[in-house]
Amino acid sequence: MSAASALNRSMGVESMAQMSQAADGLVASAKSGGFTVTKEAADPIIKTLEEFIEKIETLKFDMKVFDQAPQLGEHDYGKKMAQHLHEAANDDKSARFALGSLQDVLRQSREALLRASDQYQEQEESTRGVFRKLGGGG
Image (cartoon, rainbow, N blue to C red; front, side):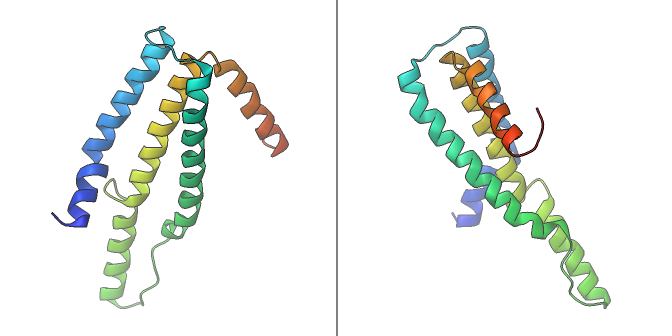
């Protein structure tokens, strides 16, 4: 199996949808009290999830280059290739899409752990404080 094939299987649309459904189930379970976890057990996992969420945010920022089609000349072939590359970089099979989906799953998992460890309100207030410091209001 090629590396591209393995990546497609692990990060494909279907796999990401399944991971998202599992994360949704985890959040729903935590909201209903279906599982609990101690703060001491949840904190290191939450911290790791947040680190990965931030790393993905940086990668997504770096991928803004794909917002525009590349300039490959004014001839028909260059225009068609530029369009094809732009579509491939932004479709539901792209690394960009997979990163966004993975980030969503990580956020859902973090939410479930926060709820399960009774930290949700505390985290929400902390996040508001960060946005206020960044000038985002709140």
